[in-house]
Length: 81
Image (tube, rainbow, N blue to C red):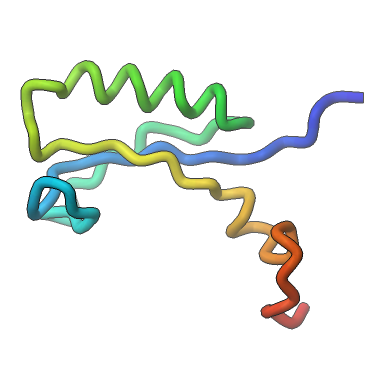
């Protein structure tokens, strides 16, 4: 049986300030891709991060999209079906 798909997104762009998480221009956020697990997303993230290392304001993030798709996955019962 194959492993459960754990969808992850990788996005990036220039931040408003170093160390922050707010993007300077939402319209210029780059969607790098969607990946079936964290390991694959991390490879894409690392590639993009290394390619933009000279720009201190450029940051890439891994979003755990599988947690957004299944809000009950972490054991919380906050959202009605």
